[in-house]
Image 1 (cartoon, rainbow, N blue to C red):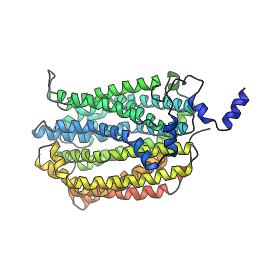
Image 2 (image 1 turned 180 degrees about the vertical axis):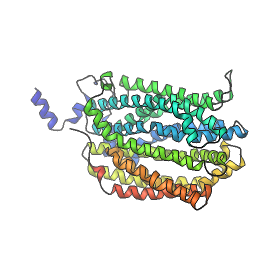
Image 3 (image 1 turned 60 degrees about the vertical axis):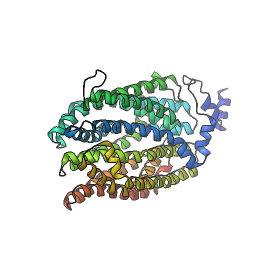
Image 4 (image 1 turned 90 degrees about the horizontal axis):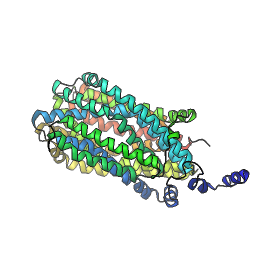
Amino acid sequence: MKNEREQKLQKGFRAQSYYKDLNSHEQTKPMTSAQKTQILEGPIVKTLFVLGWPVMISELLYVMYTIVDTFWLGKLGGDESTYAVAALQISWPVVFLLIAIAFGFGSAGVALVSQYTGAGKRKEANISAGQVLSLSLLFGLTLGLLGFIFSPAIVHFLGIHKGTAEVATTYLQIISLGMPLMCMSMIFGFILRAYGDTKTPMKVEAISVFINVVLDPILIFGLWGFPRMAVTGAALATVFSQGVACAIALYLLFSGKVGIKVTLPDLKPIKWRILQILRIGVPASIGNSGTAFGFVILMFIIARLPDQSVVLAAYGVANKVTDLMFVVIEGLGVGVATMLGQSLGADNMKRAGEVAKKGMLVMFLVLLAAAAFMYSVRELVIQVFIDNADVIAEGANFIRLFVFGMAFFGVFKAVIASFVGSGHNIPTMVLDVVRLWVLRIPLVYVFGFVLGWNSSGVWFALALSNALSAACALALFETGIWKKKVTKE
């Protein structure tokens, strides 16, 4: 009987093992054959958008956390609003630095879950998801504690002036306490998107953002009997809403209602699987950490420009607005990673290559159109968030110079997505480090301070670094490293 089953599997009956594993994972909801066929055989551009639109909405919802915080804090009025908006801009690069390691585990999850799913190995995909989840929780707890303890020292290192420094420290400490919740909900999104389900993370994120939108004005301004908490209220609203998202995510993963089903035994570390995740994820973690620390150093440099509070507030508002333009790119990038990973798992190299190249073209054109739109409305969008003439002028100046490098960032992100889907994160690490440390930070310093262009030089350098980074990414893509699978038979 055993030999007969082995013979059937050797003849290629992958669908049988995919839809009916006789083990503890048999209650999971499998991907339909239509979904799998579309990913492996459907029109590439259409499928990128089919996979990507829920991610786009999820990313929009994620960006809404800081957008809503910025909007309401900008309504506090006077110097308080300027300090508050500046504090948010200072804090989020530090938060990104703290969760960079979890991004690496998420990248490992994308490669393993997508490739095992493409190969029809549902049990392996479930176990890999459990291993990634447990590692992420451990690091989330550790990093949250470190963030809380060292927040005052980090703000002092950045050289932030007293008014903004006090607000930034408070915000950072509260957000750090919610770090494990943020990591878990983020990994949930990585896992399901790799499986091919991009809608469920979108729905969970929508619930979380709705709670944040409702709580923000209540806690910031002290409505309905609550005390007026300003920045503290914005931070508490974010942490609470992330906690709700985390609770829903864990319920869905352990119930098996979303295709992937994690069981408690799956969380127990298995040596070779942990080593596999680390081998794939550590380079991405290093790359993301290097990127995140690069943004911290960038903030350190910007904080030394004349009119610190105005420049930081303008950068904060303008950066949030341009983040909205990158929402589509993030969604398409997930589509590229998922389709390319599953195509490699199904041994369809030709399709994997077509996915990568068409993804680059589409992402370039989308950001080209977005850049033209942003340029035309640059002053109006800044005015929505804050009523300060100096901040509005500087924010519009940022957009005027930055948009010329936006389209090239689409190419860069498409190449990164290709390497993520194939599980080769050393190239992503190299590209992230080159973009920030070899190009962006030196260029910012040269144009902003050596040439004396001040803030205009900094904004121009950001755009130039995106263009040069795209060229480096294309050169690395042409090596063909992404063509090799990382899954074990």
